[in-house]
Amino acid sequence: MKFNTKTIHGNQQHDPSTGAVMTPIYQTSTFAQSSPGVNQGYEYSRAANPTRTALENALASIENGTHGFAFGSGLAATDGILKTLKAGDEVISMDDLYGGSFRMFTRIYQNFGLKFSFVDMTKPENILEKITPQTKLIWVETPTNPLMKIVDIKAICDLVKGKGILVAVDNTFASPYIQNPLDLGADLVMHSATKYLGGHSDVVAGAVVVKNEELAEKIHFSLFAGGGILGPQDSYLILRGIKTLHVRMQRHCENGMKIAEFLNNHPKIGQVFYPGLENHPNHEIAKKQMRGFGGMVSFNFKSSKKEDAIAFLEKLKIFTLAESLGGVESLANHPASMTHASIPAEIRAEHGITEDLVRLSVGIEDADDLISDLENALK
Image (cartoon, rainbow, N blue to C red; front, side, top):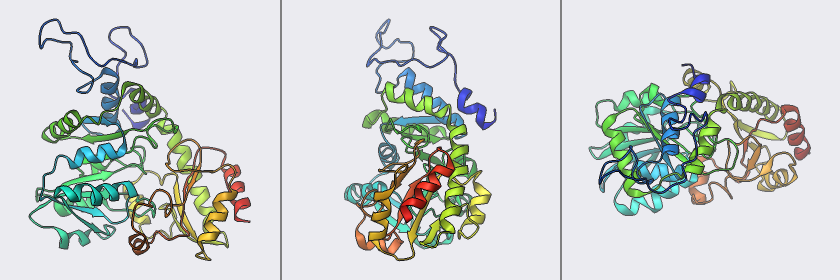
């Protein structure tokens, strides 16, 4: 199946007991057994639930993997991956990344004996000096949050091939519509399914997809033993969201490009961070590994003043000032005081997350209305 068909039919079947076209919500914690240990494939919903299984099958299909896993949030999915490591292992991470991931790495897992290094992976060779015999995982985020850097996934995978190092890619900003890291050599792909996979800002969820049986067993055990599962109601909502992912992402990409071009030509705007622009430093890599450039756009002001960013955000009418991203509605965010506030100010400044930086999640509204809203706020 091609992608547009897989979002609706990939690894899916009608409910075997009733023929229901849409997977029912199996709102149950446990399942009857005909004899001790003899069941119909389900025992207890922490281990498996039919609604969650349907979602996990769909996740595997759209990411071209063999096993999908649905977690209670994107951070729970990240946590599930890290739990496959042990004290003394080392992780090399992209330097520009979601603030919640940075917080988990440095304030939780570092205390349990994992070691983290943060490098600019837009130059893949930068990771070489950080690799040691204890390095077990490369954590890639591309496009990055919030500076929209692009990492060459295949180059990273080729660099560590045969070294016993796993490569995990946070594919949240791109979605499977735009890129499939497993096809480029990655071992794991992670999503905050809250975002584009859900698509309607009404559910919090996470996802991990792999295509290696041994690794799948480790992730499943981490999910089962750790308990960070996604409930059946939320599984249903993400599964429903996936069925319209392709049509939503097409509009997100179209609107994202129009917004980026508008901002790129505005006299009050300094730098626009969007991989679809030819002046983006990683534009050629983006064209090579992505099938579109998405709906995430970041920018700063020529004045470099935080006050200009705040005034702009307070004047928006159609764009909603809120955290999160990937929903049908357009959102605006001030990373320094919202999504990335947990990163120390000096590290934010070092990475280029300035006080005047604004991040937009461009929705699927009419592009002309969105541009008018931005124009009025910039006045």
